[in-house]
Image (cartoon, rainbow, N blue to C red):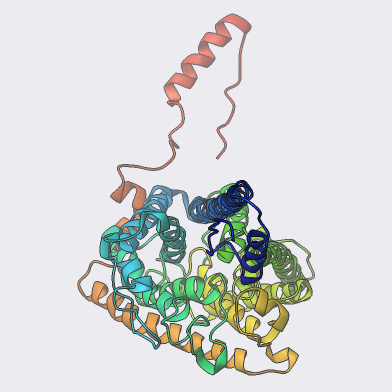
Length: 515
């Protein structure tokens, strides 16, 4: 046999190696062998270049998706700013900015360590928290895109609370809460549901009930966690002054409606959030360089769109119908449309990769109704949520997790990387059982420690601003003045201008200043 060496490596199957061996055996001289060597080397280099390209595409996909998720911070900021009164705009904008900063520092320092740290995560089994890579020490730079993507999710969970406690929460308390949530509370939820060593994880070698919890993009991990924190904070913090009680503490017959100062900003925020959700849900495929992940991302984009639209129109027209039945008048509430849209987005986030498009429509419809009902329930319970984040994220976080257990399609489950199981409506109960256990775990883990934390802040007197500061507005009391210059021109300057014009053109009436 002529001299010939060919690589039996990762780029060749056993059948292909055998084929090259047979070709080599038939080679008649060293020139033929050298030609074959060259051909094999070219193939190996081509396959290596292809693998490098796939890695690059997947990395860009995750970075771009993470950037879209991070852009949702702008959406939350605009939505919150538009939904509060003009005297608190600076305060809520700063809190949204600091959410991103606190989330970055919290997830950099301890968050990733507790969520995905791998130093002691060896072998099978479960762990309470991850450990390793504290302050990202020892982290492979080639994998930092994963940290960036997960940080964007952590910041989203933190910023959900900003709107709920708006107009009465102290800045120091807010900074403490933001760090604690992103550095410890949220990462433990992530570890138990998304890390392979979590007891609820579908990626555990021995998943619960043979399937684990299906929460593809975080209806439970992100939105229920943030929503449950917001609910506890709102209860302990108490309602805004004059919302449900008068100055003497008597219950108002009709709760006061504090109208936000800019519907346009709130509308802009809603569209920005919807746009960012295309990083949130499709991006959770984590890759795009193979057929399965590409199909999953495409399905997520479709189900996300359908559920958002269904939630919007269902919530708005249901509210219109209820008003018509009560008063005989017909009107269309933009706030209901905006929050119904967001409710549909939260509801589809858990099962976005495992449900059919028709199921996404149903999930969005129910999501809009869930928001509407829970929003009215909060008012009856006298729980003040300045932007209705609790009905959107808490109530629909629960519904979204349940919906995945009802509508999960077994073929889509396999493509998305889960076990070949199906939802309750297809005749199997293991998925919905894991979903309910997951909801209970999140509620207990989040509400108990965060309740104790907020109560401690209240006892220490660092949770809520005093009554006078709240009445004046946090922009003036905390941020060197109002966000907008509302003073207008001086009266004497206007009168002087009119006199000058009158001397040139005759008498000119000074127009009445309108608010």
